[in-house]
Image (cartoon, rainbow, N blue to C red; front, side, top):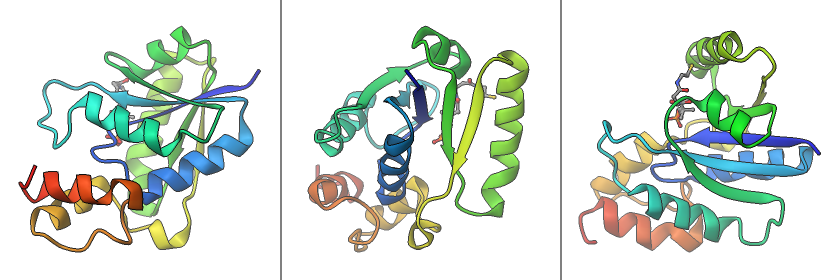
Length: 161
Ligand code: PNS
């Protein structure tokens, strides 16, 4: 069984993340979308809220699970009996950070592999950071986040909820 972990902050999940989940879902037998629990970082959504949104979004995808983790990613991957880490690369600007992280994870756990997937071009400029900023100023999130979550995300980011 080929199991993969797709880790991230997902604060909040956006259409680029969903595109990546759908791509990875086709390649593996089990995909764990893993939300980093980082108490040092101020987040717009709690880990529970982020997980709930991911659950809703992937409810029709039987191979996808949602989990949270803290500590080192490689330790979580091993605890899940997985050998594959999935990460998205949108542009060259992502590459340096992703390359560094993948090589460091390889140093820590040589038996694990990182697989990079590219989201659809139209999502190459979508990031959680930009979603938070646009939402904060009441901008339109239509092309950025999944429709079923849009009003919830917009309300939180604009301070309405
Ligand atoms: O969506 P993000 O914020 O870019 O995801 C980053 C994430 C969660 C993949 C990364 O910060 C991570 O793996 N954190 C866990 C701690 C860890 O293992 N650090 C060493 C990475 S080389």
